[in-house]
Length: 283
Image 1 (cartoon, rainbow, N blue to C red):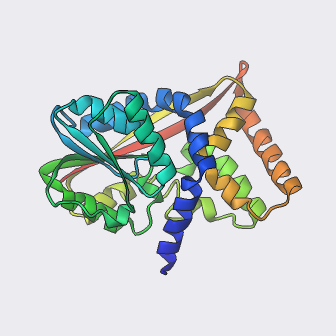
Image 2: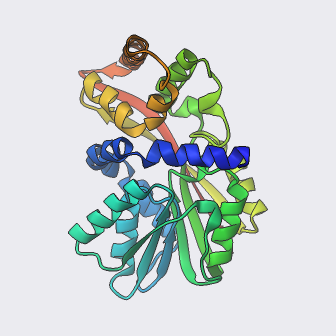
């Protein structure tokens, strides 16, 4: 097993657990509200339209999958892939509850996209591309699956400095675990946070007409307790980092995280800046 394959297995384990899937389900409403405009912009840039066949790579619990499925309508289809079966099960369940019969889920490693070449009208990936090891292989697979002239759009996090709600808790957990660089490694949450790095990844995979948009937001949470729970739900990496810590050490880490987030308290709510990037390229 290569080191990078081992990292992918770790990522699949981190996000593939039932606990991680339930955390993402708990936070789905708030996440959908925050990301809805960005998701629509991602779909716009990918030029997702009625009747299209869309590839959603590392789809997770599939909020953007459902948005794409609504756009393509009953004459179109969305193929949602992810290495985490638990996450995809929630995506399939959500599609069924929404009455969307044009969604298919496949448990697939993003580096091993065994798809018919030139068979998709658009491809998307939301908050996942930065976490994929051997990213070039994944991007080449996406490029291969697209029809000529069609587009791939991906939403990723900006730099750690621009995403403190995520970066600060991760840094605290990693320092306490003795691995202070872990949150800033590649693959990792901030690996594509520099627009130049994201654009280069597209170009290296053969995409043309590459562009990157940055969108700064204010993330608002009604209380410090909600902010801490949001971090717990969104970042299974923290539990992974603290696996070998004692119960007291884990409690101390979460107390420090709560203290760090307190700096963003404003008028009885927590307000943090958060910037996202959307990259797009054409085959």
